[in-house]
Amino acid sequence: MNTIEVNVKDTLSAVSAEQIKALNPAAEKAMKMLADGTGAGADFLGWVNLPSEITDAHLADIEEAAKNLRENCDYVVAIGIGGSYLGAKAVIEGLSDSFSQLRPEGDARRCRVIFAGQNIGEDYLYELQDLLKGHKFGIIVISKSGTTTEPAIAFRLLKEQLESQLGKAEASKRIVAITDAARGALRQLATEEGYKTFVIPDNVGGRFSVLTPVGLLPIAVAGFDIRALVAGARRMQAATAEGVENNPAALYATTRNALYGAGKKIEILVNYNSKLHFLAEWWKQLYGESEGKDGKGIFPASVDFTTDLHSMGQWIQEGERTIFETVLSVESTAHKTVIPTDEANLDGLNFLAGKRVDEVNKMAELGTRLAHVDGGVPNIRITVPALTEEYFGELIYFFEKACGISGYILDVNPFNQPGVEAYKRNMFALLDKPGYEEASAAIKARL
Image (tube, rainbow, N blue to C red):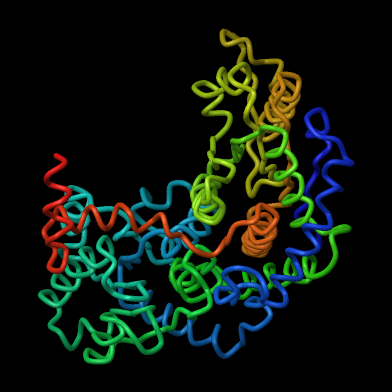
C-alpha cells in the first residue's frame, strides 16, 4: 500500500539540505525523549504508542455504542471543544459527501453527527435546539472535568431537552459520556445517571486524543471504519518509530524548524480539496497550542485553494517574506467528472473539454507552487494517496509525531498550554464566579 510522503526540495531556496540535516541530532534526541518519557510533559505521552495498544475488544465496544446511537437517533450531538471536537470533525468532514447534510434521504449507513460546545453562541444553541425538536437525538459529551464552560453550557441545555422529550430514564440510554476514569463532575453525573462511558486516558492531552474514544466514537457514529483509521495510524507509528533517515515526521519537523531559524515565522497549511478544511483547523490547534509558548513558535495558518487564491493569493505571492507553505496534495479523488464541450465556447474553456476537473485542479496546484516558490515562499509538499480512513489515520499520527519532535527541537514543552487559562480567569471574574471576587474587583476597576 502507498503511504503519505514528504518532499522538501522546494524549501532549498531558503535553507540548504545541510541546514536541515544539521537538526537531525536534535530530532534524534527528541525522538528518544518521546520514546523514553524523559522530556518535558512526559506525563502526556500516551498518544505515542496508542495506535498499537488499541485492542479489538476496545474497538468493538466503541462500535457497539455507535450502533446503539445510530439505530435510535436521527441526530447525535457531539459536545466538546478544542481537541475534544476538532479531530472527529476533521475526519468526518474529510470522509463525508460534501452535501450529505442537505440530502433529505440521508445515508442509511450513517447518522448525522452535529457538534456543540465548541462555542458560546446563543443563536447557534437556540437553532440547534430548534432543529432537534421532534427528532430522535442522542448526545456524546466529552470532557475530562465536566466543568469546561462551553461544553458544560451546551450539555446542560441539551440534557434538559432530551430528558423533557424522553424522561430521565430513557434519556440516559442515549447519552454517552467520555470523561475521566474516576474524577470530575461528569464522571460523578455519569455514574449517578447510568450513562454509558468511555475513558479519556490521563496521559493523552486533548489535542492528541483523536485515536481515543474522543474521536473514534463520533467517527464510528458517522458510519466510518475506525478499524481502518487505527490501522493507518499503526502503519505511521511503525514508519516513524526509529531514526531520522526515511522518517517523514522527522523530516517535516527538522525542515520547518530550519525554516523558522531562517526567519520564516508563519506556516500556512494549504489544501486543494475542500474536504480538508477541518483537518487544517485541527492542525492549527495541534501546532499552535503545542509550540506557541516561551516567546517562541511558528504561527500556524491555513488556506483552502484555489478558493483563497482569490483573497489571500496576492499577500502570499508578494507580501512580507516571513512565510512558508506546507501543501497537502491528494493524489486520487473518489469520483470522476469530465468537462464537456460547449459549441458556443463563450467562456473560452473548450481547451479543457474532455479533461477531468481534478486534472485542472492539479495543474492549478502545480502552477501555484511554482509561482509561490519563485516569489520567495518555500514549500513543503505532503502527498496523500487518497482521502480514506487509512490515510486519515496515517496523517493524524504523522502530524502528532512530528509535532512532538518539533516542539522538543524548539526546546519547549509541547504538551502543556498554560496560556489558555488567562482568558478563562478574566471571563470568570467578569461573570462574578464564586471564588473570583478579588479578581472581579480588580478587573472591573480597569474597565
